[in-house]
Image (cartoon, rainbow, N blue to C red; front, side, top):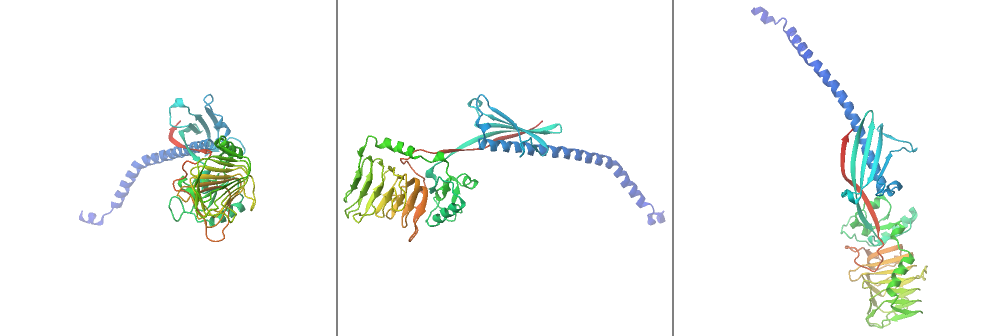
Length: 424
């Protein structure tokens, strides 16, 4: 016996038999589990493909709602639903992940008592199964106006014009209203309809130029004429060229209508202030402290009021409105001309830390050097730098009440309020 144990003959056979026995016992179960895993993997893969396809339907519906396609615009309380299949580039029914996707957009009404605007049901189906996503879409409204940006231009500029605009921006000393010192947004021009503009936070828009502003946000000459005529209809009317000389005295000027040219000046060496207490409506070219050796220092206190010059005159030396370099402007208020504006106030515009809004409806505002302007400019802009950099800053708190039409464009953006998946 001692010899047999010492040789250990047959020990490997016993281990092999034990392993074969264990393998035989578990192989059947293991193979069965692997088979189930393969089948389950196929099911998961199919369900995942359905989920992604159904989600693509939701995203497509959100895009259609955001862009208010004709079918979405047509939804009413009587016809609340629109059902469609996703289509391919040729207009045929498209399959997403080899699944057919049907989408229903429902306009929610007040009776639904939900904080949402639309319900989307997207169903992806194929091979006897399906996945359904029910999403609720809520809209938020933001308002964009001409007073939101440092410079606002209505025209859709081409690449060369944008390049020239940005070169003019480089001539300005711009301070970001939010106080940041290294902002990649500041001092650039953006297409109002671009994704780049849409991604800019509202509080950062005061240090940019915007072009291609929609016509709905831009006042027409008739809009402005009607608005400001109401202010002066019962005011003093002059039907000839008129001159107002402060002669060194502070003057409060009531609403005034001038059917002709208007000259405002101060011929006395004493610095005098003209305080507006109402709208000035002038039909022809207007000059303020400009172009004569008799002009002395003066301050124009807009006092929340508006100067509206209906003249369409344009061209160098023929501007509809000229503001000379001995005039200091105090805001808040609006300076509006239909034609060109020559803008060279003395030292500061918005000198009392109240902003001024300058609008050339159909022309160009020529910004001259060595000014410190707090406010915003609308219309084409030409920056003439001879020495120094004009300082043009947007008010950190935005514009307060000014006598300007409330021409705001409502931008409604939509997002998913809730999202629920179910298997069919």
